[in-house]
Image (tube, rainbow, N blue to C red; front, top):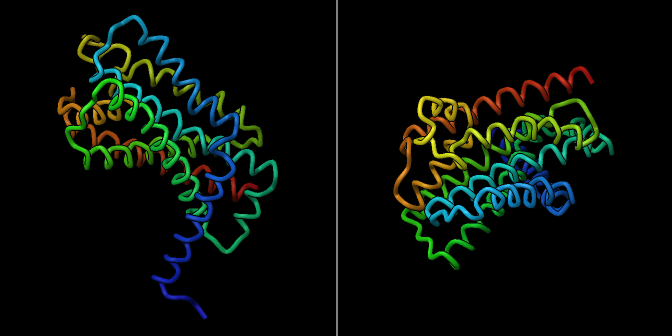
Length: 252
């Protein structure tokens, strides 16, 4: 007997949530996730921020953007290759759950991790720098959007056919670092002159601008352009990621 569409959707959502909980339990505290998702971006930001006397309105949004960028995009590249090695990924694919639900579960797991890590510099900013949140509801929406987008980016790179997380992380960092340096976090877009157009190709540019806008009420591009930019990148990451994982599944 075929289940109704609502029942089928509910079953797929429960399956995706089960995968999310599995990732949280297994991968959030893995050394690779802590190194590439927390310590690496933290030390990188401190090395650029120290001695520059940056105001809290610039320091906190920048650190939040870097935190969510690295943290959310690190879980998928840690989880998927590891599960290929242990054959867990193959068992999930052959289970009565759609491949899309598997990817959604993996993406949500990374997004939650990214949002949690991004909250740490926000709390530090509130406690030690007196950071005020101009738009609390908007901040929640922004964190949901950027965390989901960067987690989808990580899942896209996790489609690389390897069972070694280090291989994926090496390629991912080869892309993440240039995107970081052109994002306007270390050099404001307004100070880049004609080269400021390069910042438009980095999704981190829109993430940082949105976070700064909901915290301080000011941003370079404005919320409309930021949201459109993030939605475009999210769609690109999802489309490429789903196609690559589907192709690998069929070829495997």
